[in-house]
Image (spheres, one colour):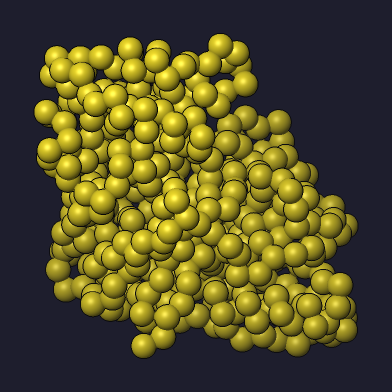
Length: 404
């Protein structure tokens, strides 16, 4: 078997930076930072859609720096479902639940809620904004998927403190914005954690109340707007009697307080692990055909580009789905074009003057990048070819030579 590390983008709700360029697809991932999460499989990445026996492992780094392998059963969800989910999560899940759907043809039957939940946990290319909004919905199908997702995590929750479990849970998706949605998601999480640690609290209500207390403490401790920070004694006092009228052990509350104050829960922050490759390239604009220097990151099967290397918010991104790479060695350049009969590249770019989540599909027929040297160009071309994916037709991963 061949082991590899899959690059995982995690999305947040913050907006893309403005850039006068027309660029990418579905929902733009607005903010990026690095985390110690990695995903591994004992198989080739292109085999994922066809194998139902795959095991996915999330390598989780604990607060003390030790690593823990969290193993999940694989799910043979077809690759085309990724793009479909990022467009319309509800309709995609309905398709996966319908035996006659095109999404279930190769599988031979409808997917169970457990299989869908495993896919949501381990795919790595789904919009975390869309995932959070879907999991927070009130309809029966979304609630069933949320319940199945929590059930998949329960064996691992048994090994985690409450704050560690909460951190991990909130790294999977972006927490939805509405109070009712947040309450629904947190209630399911608290119930799952209480089942995993049955002797810790009298009931799941205790875990639910304490989760909210930790989120409030997190805001208090790490917000620059809060000048009078909550003390340990105040935190303990605020949580008296929450365990069905009884006080929780002081040591438990103190350890949770110290953990949150020392290490912020990045609720709104987008995270992804180290890139396949990254560096400076010149990118040609859309309407104005001039080259601008951009810091480019290839992570998973997506190219993200930034104004600077230190920017947290990208200018746009390009999913590497059904693409061809056309190399131009004499110019140290390469062009991304649609494979097959498509005429427009999948891409997303920020809207001018946009607010949070103010981004739009791009309309590029191609994307042209220029490297500093031909060798650097070849490195990028090889990496892109290796990490592009097919959706509806066989992938054409050939590189064509084009003279200037």
